[in-house]
Length: 557
Image (cartoon, rainbow, N blue to C red):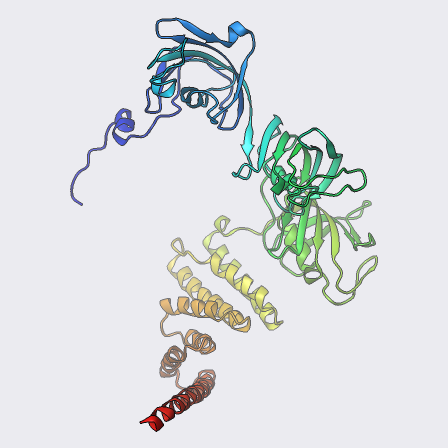
């Protein structure tokens, strides 16, 4: 490991490390090698932009081909018609496939192609002799991008008109498309001048969902669809204005992505959805404890309005996030919004009013109702983040969150209390900038928050997390009786009885009269007895079975 290794200079690294320089940067008049097989390119005229064609794209070029002595053997310019071919499919010599991939639209270049990448030992009689090095003066006029969407040849997408920006729709989003589907013989089987659907749910045939996830707003494409993404072996019967699709039929689908509404799955179980109707400003979003001001309309599934706030010159509706001032689903959704954003929020009963009837401002919400909120986030004032606070502010904020957690714990809201304790601990997690006195305060407060959070986790039956929180405290303060006691409780529930006994005995050494620890020791002893009985029964049954098996053998002797 003490040896010195020479690092080659930058201009030598490609040769020494055998890294192919497949698409080098060119200046007009400059010639460079592409790859490692002797193909050379000389730039005559620069092209536009940065994009270059890829395999499967349909390119259109003008070219003139000559031997090294200047003899011309072919030219599209003389013929007066540009040459079209599909890149990377072996329709042209290898030198073309490799070279044209490096060109931009409008670029003009001269390629010197060795025989290995041209017509080889045989040549192409009578115009090209054996082992001939060829030169082609090529201008890339244009290309049509063709993508193999599923990478198995089942859906090819040819871009007819480029879209805007760079975003693509995702599974939850609602897209608006125009399309026209035809059989290979040109028979029209289905069309629409505007249909809206959720990407995940799809429409007409599976190819539409697959394709729109690769498209940009305003993009127009031609899809070549194999049967597995059309209607497969069964085909499709005629229905309404749509014609039948025969079994195992390919489809040619012209598809335009007109627009889409972004739909966010606010909760992992998809029971709170947010459909963006108007994009907001910037990147900032509310966090826990933010004071938000909104316009709000709440509706039932049948359109009945049960709540209306902030409209018709009424004051904006104001509430604090993560403070149970609105239903959980609405609270969570608003924390994903930007200033000025308008959204439709769809909330399942579990995150709304549940199985009970609820009287709201304008109507009653029946039990088990999915509710719909039209929300416009007018403004918000975020709770100060820890990195914007000085050390004393961090300690005060942690103390306030701890008190909020205590109130929630007493109310039996253990999950929400746990979040408060976690936030409190984060405020004072790093104390490098604290004074000695502040470090003492932070240490005590951090221990209290972690232990209170451990109590929440025990209530929530998350015993592993409770054990981790207690261990975090004990790593700093090994004689903390409360941490030993709560970790022992977690160990008992996880059936780690030996570890539980070690913690309880250590706690009693430190505080022999601690009533809670003594009671937990009794619980532990009962658990040990219970497990011993189970073990005795298990082994008793096992030995009894073994005896029965041995008896016939004894009789045979």
